[in-house]
Image (cartoon, rainbow, N blue to C red; front, side):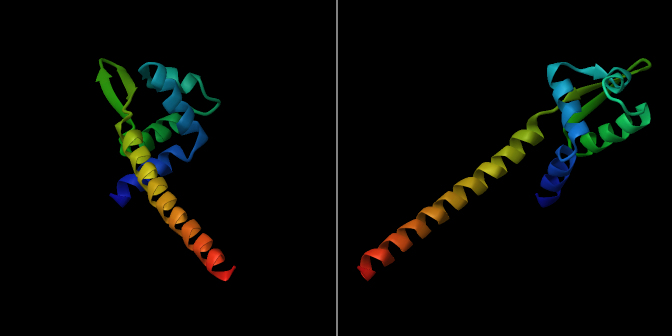
Length: 109
């Protein structure tokens, strides 16, 4: 859906959020450990995590006092699939345009 893509692309548009995703791609981590990796406040990292959760890119599990975040790659795969569909669509269209221009040039000669 368009809203899903808006959420995913909006979430990954920010370099801090992309860095958080890369960090979580290595292993799940506590929110406090994620925050230590960035020169921003815990509150700022928490806000980034909320955006990533809304896009479905991060899952959060509460274990006692710890909030453990993990990466969910499926939304990235889905967005990548959409990009691939668009690439294929435009390649077909551009190939047709190339053929049209070549045919027109041949007819003019």
